View 1 (cartoon, rainbow, N blue to C red):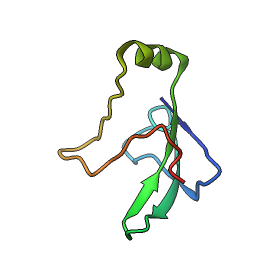
View 2: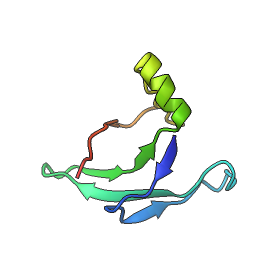
View 3: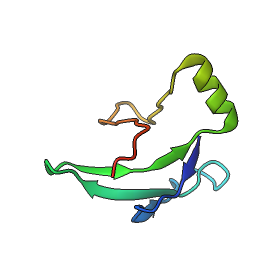
View 4: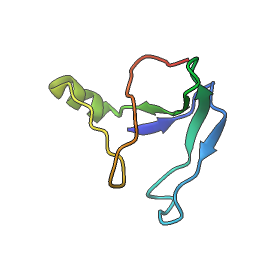
Length: 81
């Protein structure tokens, strides 16, 4: 997947110091707060043509979070704004 800029973005997250520019691009994000007061960081991603084909074939998306645990996350095809 390729990170994508979007109209509602309010800033960028930079790559970790341990990664090179070839390994990680800055990520456009919007910092939001939902009506129940819960804060969130939203990013936007685009599937490559190859990934679209694989998704059509399997119907699956994989999420990888670096570390030993996983914070609450959500994947959606619907614009969250």
